[in-house]
Length: 318
Picture: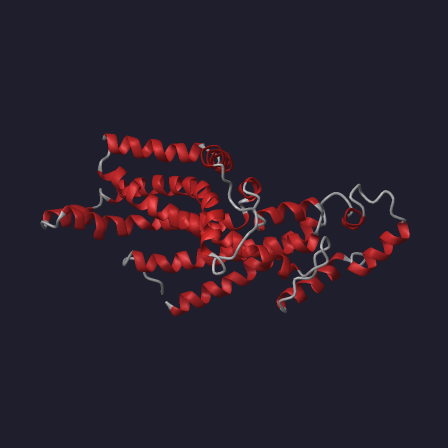
């Protein structure tokens, strides 16, 4: 197990290096001049040419691309992601002040999805083709069909029309004021978590149905094991493997994928920062954000693989 863990950690290095190389050189193919966009919103038409040249030299954009990459990647290896071309502040600072908000929404949506998906998916499989199954399937299909941002707009309209109240617009850390924090973030978490739970519910149902046909389930029933124990101890544990994968990947996606939902609820998170960085051609900020999301995906996949061995005793890492 230790050897497997060490090898997987080593495999992260070429993966993240490949992501860094791709994002760095592909960004240079974007149309437009980032310096002109930074100095003048209309494309820099009124900026003297010598000012553009001086600014490119200051930012190091006049050097060959491989030199720019080595300088940037050397800084990344030392924990320095550079400075935003848009705000002039450290990339780590710009990401750090928004990461807490996005992480909390993602964690709350994940908890909601797990609390809904596991029991609903199991009940739907146990009572297959009954009214319970049909009701749960309608609930989950509706979650897949309804966009999260649209559900968020409906939530805001209902709160405004029925209670004359809208969520706070300013983010407050949880440990400063838990009530104010939850009153703002619980609604986007519900809007995102509903769709999230629908995906996991469908996966849980299909996994339970597949596992219930296995020989060890029939053996447990033949030995006289109670049906509840058969489902809880044997079926659910082995059916969790694909569900854990879906939950983990969805969680990683939520870190940078809440672009429209954050716009609807006016949340200044990572997704909104992505849009602003791309709109302004901020190379250094985009590079930092893409690397952040890549690190989350790689780490979550790593932990999912380790969790497989705990959920299914048949899986052994040697």
